Every structure is written in C-alpha cells, then in structure tokens.
Image (cartoon, rainbow, N blue to C red; front, top):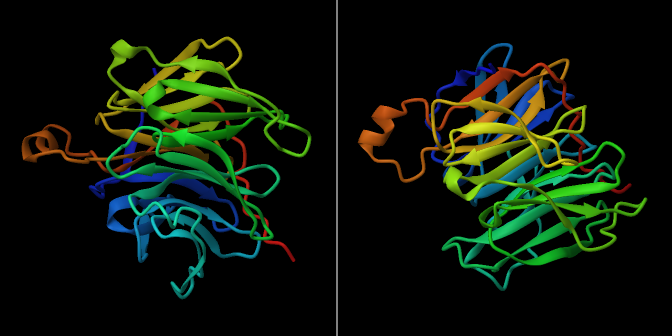
Length: 294
C-alpha cells in the first residue's frame, strides 16, 4: 500500500503546478490565488516564496537559469535572485475573465499552458504553446479547465486533460512535436468517483500519475490499456497535481488545496493545502526546461 507524508503544512488555498528544478534540487510550485511561487528544498524543509503581480498557474525553469510563468496577466519571466518580473506576452488579452492554469515544457523545450475562465464558463479556455523565439500558437480551443500535460518517452504522444470531461486524451505527434491528428481517449475517470482529473505526470515506465481533485488521491494508469494500476490516498480531498523529483527522481511530490473549505472542513482535513511526498517505487523523468532562443 502506497503512503505519503506531509512535508510542508502551509495551508495553501490552491497549491498547484509542482515542477522539479534539477539544477537547484528544489521543488517549484505555485499558490495560484495568493499570486506567489514557492521554492521548496526537501533536504532542509525550507520553503521560500516569490510574489507575483497576478494569479499564477504554472512555473518552469529556463535554459538560462531564470523562471517562466503562466499567469492571469499572460506569460512572464522572473529572475529568482531579484524577484524582478518581465511581461513577455498575453495571448488572451481580449479575455479578461480568463487565467492561465496548468503548464509544462515539452521535450523540445517549448512551454505549453492552458487557460480557463474564472467562472468556469464551458469552452472558454485554450491550450497555447510558447516557443523559445517568443512565437505563441494556439494548439487547442474550446476547453473548459485546461489541466494536466505529459509527453511519452518516445516523444510520439502528448497526454492532456480537460478536467470536466473526465478523460485523458492522447494526441499523436510528429517527429518535431507538432500535433498530428485528432486525439483518442486513453484514460477515463469513472463518474461515480465524484472527482475530476487535475494535474498529471508520467513515470519512467510510461505510466500516468493523475491527481484527483475531490477524490483524495493520486492514481497510476496504463495509458495503453486504460487500466488503473495503483491508488495513493491522501488525507485531503482536493488533490491538485504531482511530479517526480529528488536527486534520483524517485520521489513523488503532490500539491493539495483547501479552496472554499469552511472551518469545519479544515478541522476535518488539517493538512489540506500542504505539500506531500511519497516513495512510490518507480522513477520519473526529468522535467524539461524552456529553451530560450540564442
């Protein structure tokens, strides 16, 4: 039976987007509605926050040592040593009711990040890709809550979650990482689980780890057969995302939330909004960083 432990009892309203920063051996994560990113060192237990001027959905390291962010104000770059933030571009300037949600870099060093409406308006979001030369392209439109992303180790498949659909989609890719056709459904979350798929990562065996918001668990799935393989239960229902990290990439880090929980709910789930760590018996893949064009 898989177990986890809370390594940072921070009570975040909406912790999300964990990403292992290999060069610094720290976990990057976002506290979306508090407009800040965290840098957590699992060796010491220390967590440092860096404030931002807008709600932030995702953070990734770049090839030149700074950070790239997807926020309600668009794509930003941050120098983590000074906290100075630079606006790159906002592809949804005409949609002030939207914000960026989950995002991740692909094996080609490009940043994919999706949007959603604050009021959860159906099909108001999109999936965007920021290339190293600054070019931004819309990869998918009419999404509701753009969420988890992962790429297969052979680079032939992009896995993607639009949470309310309860499905994980598998997009075929060209050798250059372009979407090559319509997706197929590879994983379906049962409706009677009363949970939606949220963030996601992939392990070195090609299996998907999917956080279940409302379901109090991270689940491991075979994307080829669609079969549920393992379930890691957590002591809080709002499980938001996960990633592999640590010196050997053999630790699963998990973010959780306490969004709209009243005092009674927090008393019942005091660790909600914390960061968790688990040894799940399998290694992950290194997180890809954003490749800044020379």
